[in-house]
Image (cartoon, rainbow, N blue to C red; front, side):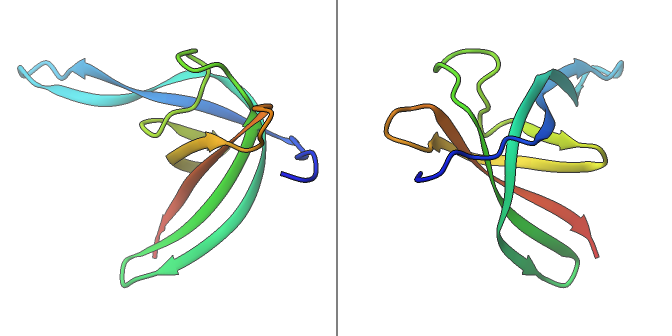
Length: 109
């Protein structure tokens, strides 16, 4: 990473949580884990018959491994009505100051 990212978007980090559905099973709900400042950049786009999918590269400040505020692939970011599902997370720079989260935003066609 050559230039410092411009962390200008405040995203809500959410994680899945299983809760009883009252009928002996479970349902998945999303629980807010906190807010993170990020840079959001498009990387790819794809269309098929029913879904438009936009690939994103989301850069955030690094968080230690195992910390509750560190994004993981099971989680998602929310930006208003937009939802970005996290697919992978890696360190963005050799010094470990930033993380790159590869995510996708889906919208029904």
